[in-house]
Length: 235
Image (cartoon, rainbow, N blue to C red; front, side, top):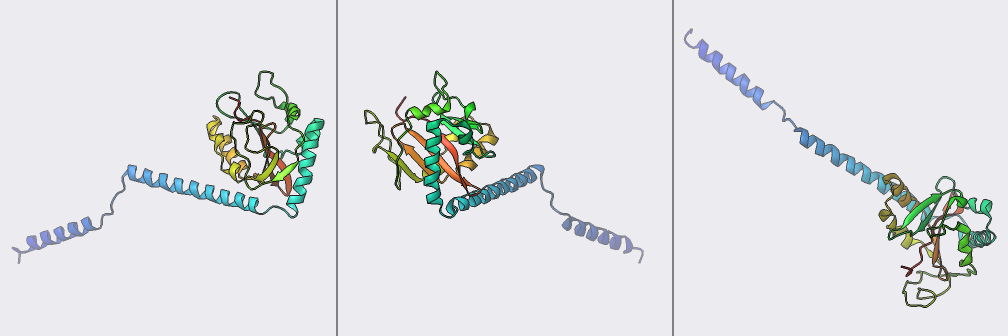
């Protein structure tokens, strides 16, 4: 019996070591863990963005009752205020939280300027004229509803559009416009501009001036959200 005891003990020891080896969990490398966290964060960001877009698009699809009639009255007031250069009245058309973005071209790239008081804005020309000087060319806007706004042709001697007049259309094209991505905006403001752009419901094009006005409903009230003062074919 003494001869076999050491062999028995050795067998038991090897058996324990074998079991211990099979039960050891696999270790995840730091690089793999970092990649997993990065992917989880990316998926979370995508989910937040998709949710926000869905909510904003739902707002666009469901305007308040009698929105069409209300907009015609709103726009007549908007045009009258510009003609009379009424600063206080114009500021009431700007949502104080979202503000108004004015788009101009001091150089090759578009410039987005956010204001809540229209008197602080200066146009991107040598004279740096105040906002209400747009009334020199923006006038006599009799709205004509169309499905698609006239195209820029740069062929006319006076107006660079395929049709002449003052047109209103759904703002689908503007909601998809990504010009703000090339305006050298800080990341947070670029994100804000993109989100505000999704709230735009109607675009008005005045071909005589080349100006575009973009409007949306905020808390059931029409507001001017963007004004595009870039003049096509002027370069």
